Length: 331
Image (cartoon, rainbow, N blue to C red; front, side):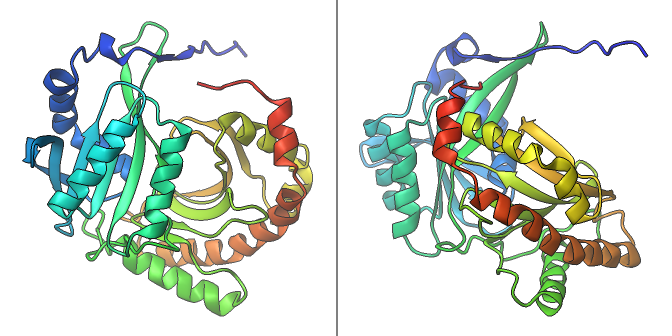
């Protein structure tokens, strides 16, 4: 068998090579491609209401509204690393416009600003969510550059209730909300001790950390299949991958305990995370009721097996030591 010819994925560091000016180039582009941002955030489509919206003597980059709920969305962006001035502007605009979804976009969210967003989400009420998002440009070989939005800080559902007021549907079929409600009812009946979900957003259900707060279980529809997954998402991609490598050493034992061969994905380009998952082909829109019920039975059986296989192994990890032995910064 011939060896496959693969390209190399490279990140473009200088965003100003594509968008020389923030207000004249990047903000209009983001407004025209706002669907990419709403997809990354996991919220309903954003309807843009205005650019450079005046708030007192300042101007908000993008004012929008979430299509499914009517919630006000504000987006403040910059083409440099995050700074205190923009943090202050974000808070000013959020207060002045009574925003419910607050998004700060930058090519580099500094650690102190990511922590500030986490703190804001811990302190504010149920109806407001703050997001910090890194905008990145990638290419394979000499291909055109491709944008990617990487969410690095978002609301925790222990503190927020950002679930949509109206379930979104797919292909005219019953929406994700109905599917997830029934799946959770079945899970509670079969495994009463299983933890309550941490978040239910669109096609996702996520559960609290297993063995460590940065390791979680989830169910999701993506890539034309229904998946049960264990996600590793610490603050460092290098730590994620070091933890993944340690767990991978037990791959045969984990697969045996779960009862099927799992997919081990060390470097997930959708987000700076590693994951282990199992999937069944199909989408919610194309699945008949009998197939949807089979998806639910399969997940209800598999989630406790994932927890039992991974939780003790994750709890035994020394993440500080792993981080110290893997200092490579993955782009």
